[in-house]
Image (tube, rainbow, N blue to C red; front, side):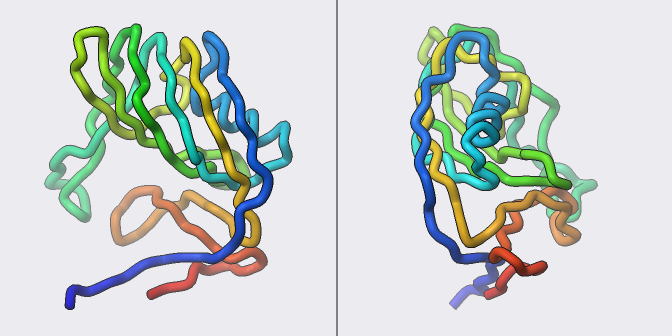
Length: 166
């Protein structure tokens, strides 16, 4: 049996928000604003697809200077129109501010498929349909992880200061 390790918390899903982000709205800023106006602290993105004017993202590449041998490349910007096939993520907090961790796949007008980790402020939509589900009973944080040398997902049961471990 291989080594299994995890940091985890348990909770429930709360209210659900369905929305269409309209032309010019940045994807991640729009998702975070939907959470803010609906008093949602932490959420999971159940469904998300549509089209972009352009897209800015990064993906993993080998990095000998990293603690774990990988890191993100420089920002890639693809000009549109771009078909946004599917995206998923978690709405977290870091130092009290929203920080959404989001990955997705897209294709350009020639059918070339690409994707990665989306960067806030770099993905203005043509139109995007999104369904968000509030998470209750636990908190989603992004914080620096010593083992990986990068910010990571850190779920914590509400009113606790540390994550559960396997």
